Each structure stands twice: as structure tokens, then as C-alpha cells.
Amino acid sequence: MPHNIAILGSTGSIGTQTLDVISRFPERFKATVLAAGSNVEQLIEQAIRFRPSLAIIADESKYERLREALSPLGIETAAGSAAMADAMERPDFDTVVTATVGYSGLLPTIRAIRAGKQIALANKETLVVAGELVTRLLAESPTRVIPVDSEHSAIYQCLVGEDNSTVSKLIITASGGPFRTFTREQIADVTPAQALHHPRWNMGAKITIDSATMLNKAFEIIEARWLFDITPDRIEAVVHPQSIVHSMVEFIDGAVKAQLGIPDMRLPIRYALGDATRLPSSERPLSLSDYAQLTFEKPDPEKFPCLTLAPYALNRGGNAACIINAANEVAVRAFLEEKISFPQIYTTITDALAAIPFVNTPTLDDYVATHRAAIAFSEEKTGCKMKLR
Ligand code: NDP
Ligand code: MG
Image 1 (cartoon, rainbow, N blue to C red):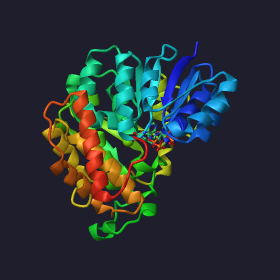
Image 2: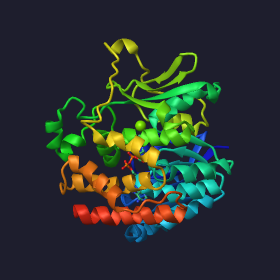
Image 3: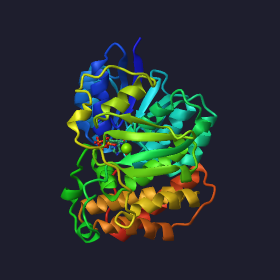
Image 4: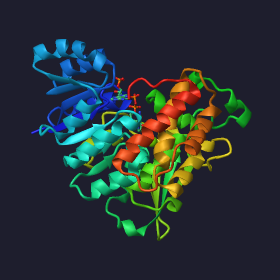
């Protein structure tokens, strides 16, 4: 029997690579639910090829087109973000790949946890926005989370067979993004086209901009704090421009374990879909002799102030990281639409942190309200309207 899988964000970078992995192991995996944001034509093509039981489009204005194309094939259709969350309770799949962007991952992930589904977690923003709440829900549920983010997958792999109490430090590698060698003055004037040109990874636009500001690394520190239940002072980021060492774990005896590989998200996707086991790859394996050197350097928070937001958010707790995430979602869009400059991504976030009321122990409703308030505040500040909510 194949393992039945739901993919939230099937038309994106992680979503399409997940479908690629599924297509290579047809006796092992079946895509049972496909959900996309607004790219209805691509979703239809995917549904025709993979024949899921259900296809969902978050953008309700595209529903008629989806229904008309897929109902003759006997494929159920639905629209809206509530439908995506409701689908998490279906009995016809056991694993969900959360690969939508930003806050949109939170509510479906919570529903999936409540339904006891296994989660292949790509959407790191879920743990950024509400890490404490999600971790608490996970503790009460049979759900297992296997990270897809390459750094966290690497750490997960390094921890296999180890006693977690012997971990002294997690070392998260960062490519440094396209502006690693730029001066502060040069960074001030970069264009969206420059920021969208990531040196190592081919990813969706939002995470590519997050990599350029290095907020992505701050998010990954927050993600690691919750995934591996480790205090923030024991998580370190190190810049490794070749992106071959995907992350490391240091143990109390001084040993450091690392996971290496070519930069290809299909490895962590295969590992997560395969329940943390190893499936064969048809890609060219890593050949270390192709690399004259692997280098490591300290990240520079003076040049990339978004890095300081991880210690800030983790020390402050409450809804601080939720505010950061929401303001960043708007700021990234505003930068891409050339409404604000690259450095203003950071100041949009700090302005929101100053303006939105702090909540010390947020409930789910508090997170939802905080997200909405920070989005509205940042939209007003930048003059940029978000499309899908
Ligand atoms: P993409 O932008 O490439 O894809 C996003 C997907 O989510 C698309 O299918 C999009 O649909 C859908 N989507 C967007 N907004 C919504 C919404 N509001 N409701 C429902 N669906 C929506 O992103 P990536 O694949 O790059 O990233 C996905 C997640 O994985 C992010 O959280 C990112 O941080 C994380 N991640 C990505 C990595 C990568 O290599 N790409 C690496 C590590 C983590 P449509 O296109 O149809 O509008
Ligand atoms: Mg990553």
C-alpha cells in the first residue's frame, strides 16, 4: 500500500519537488490531496497527472475553473483557506507536507496535529509564529514532525542514535545569500532582481528575499529552538557559502557531527516522506574533490540586522515572533513591488514590534489577532496590500 500524502503548496518550489520525489517512487507514495494558492492551471495539470482524491485552491475566485476541469475526472475540488485546514481531518492520507508560504501554514498544521497526521514540515513560519503553542499541541498528540528545511533535516539526521541530553550545541549553516560580500552601503541600494538571485538554492520568492536579508537564518534559529527543544544560547549560525555542510551538532565530548550533500531539497524531502529513512537518489552524488575548499565565517549582524531578531524574539517570547513574521510578509512584498528599499524590510519589522501590543502568553486567537494587526499596520506603513490571506 502506498503512503498517502497531502501537499499544501503543491505548485511551489517545495511542492513541485515533493511531486517529483513521489513520481520516482510510485509504489511507495501517492499524492492524495493537492492544495495551491492561486495558480489554478498548474494545479489542474498536477491533478490530471497525479490523480489525487481532492484538489484545493486557496484563491476562491479560481474555484469554478478548477471544478469544471477536474469534476469530469471524478476529482473532488474545494476552495479557500478554511477548506485547506478542514482537509487535514480527512482519513485518506497519513502525512502532510506543509509547503505553503508564511502564516498560511499555521492553521492547517494545527488541524493536522489535532488529527494526528505525520508532518513533513517545510513551512518554518508555523514554528516562528506560534512555536510555543505548536510544541505544546505536539506534546499532546501522536503526531511526528520531520523537518524538510535542509538545516533542520541535517540536525535531525545527526541526532539519530544519540542521547539528546549529550548535545551541547546546534550549528546552523547559512549560505550568506547574494549580498554576503557587499558593503553596508552597497546593500542599501540593491534591487529586487539582485535579491532574487540566490547563489546556491532555487526557491520561492519570499524565502529567497528572507535569505538575502538573513531573516531566514533568524527564522531557522527559532525553528530549531522549538523543533529540538534547545535553549537559544546553544544555537549558533555560521556562514558557509558553498552550502555543502547542511548543519552540525556538537556533543558534550567535543565531537561534531555534520550532514553533507549537494544543495538539493529533494534529499530532505525524500528523508521526511520516507519516515526518516534513506531512499535512493538518482542525482549525481557529492564529490568533495570538486570543491577546492569548504569555508566557514561568522555572520555579520551589522550588515544583516535581521539576524538580531532571533535572539530578540526568543528572549521576549509571547507574540514577538508572530509580529516579526507578519511585518516581514508585507515588507518582502513591498520590497518586491519597489515600494520600500531593502534596508526598510528591517525597519518595517521594528516599527511593527514597537506598535503592536505585546501579549505574553498568547492563545491561538491572540496569534490570529496579532497577525492581522501586524499585517494591517505594515500595509499602512508601506502602502502595499497583501493578496491572499
Ligand atoms: P513558493 O513560493 O515556491 O510556493 C508556495 C506555495 O504555497 C505555492 O504552491 C503557492 O501557491 C502556495 N501558497 C502561497 N500562499 C498561499 C496561501 N495564502 N494559501 C495557500 N497556499 C498558498 O515557496 P517555497 O516552496 O519556496 O516555500 C514553501 C515553504 O517552504 C516556505 O515556508 C519556505 O520557508 C519553506 N522552505 C522552502 C525551501 C525551498 O527550497 N524552497 C527550503 C526550506 C524551507 P500558488 O503558487 O498556486 O499561488
Ligand atoms: Mg533552510
